[in-house]
Image (tube, rainbow, N blue to C red; front, side, top):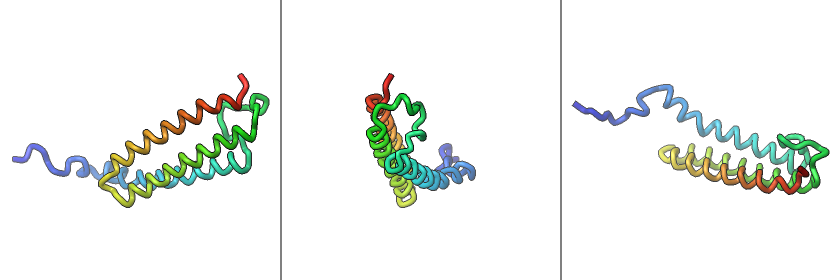
Length: 120
């Protein structure tokens, strides 16, 4: 009698479905972040940035440039994580772990440096 079956995790069809859906969700999310980065960086739509209002912004060009560039990088990392998860499905867990760490670092860095463009 085998106490530890070989395919415990993938024997549940719903979990297998979600594991196949994750790369597609990352691709869609990555494209959305790239589009948001474009609107903030190129079109100067700082209204997309939550927590900022027009009278509080000291330098609109600096804020849109900094935030837009970071959104571009986060979108590119997210898009590449989705592509790598499709190309290497066996390495989905390490890819996801690296993606979470990199995105968290960029978000934290972006939020800390955004303060110089907003008066408080």
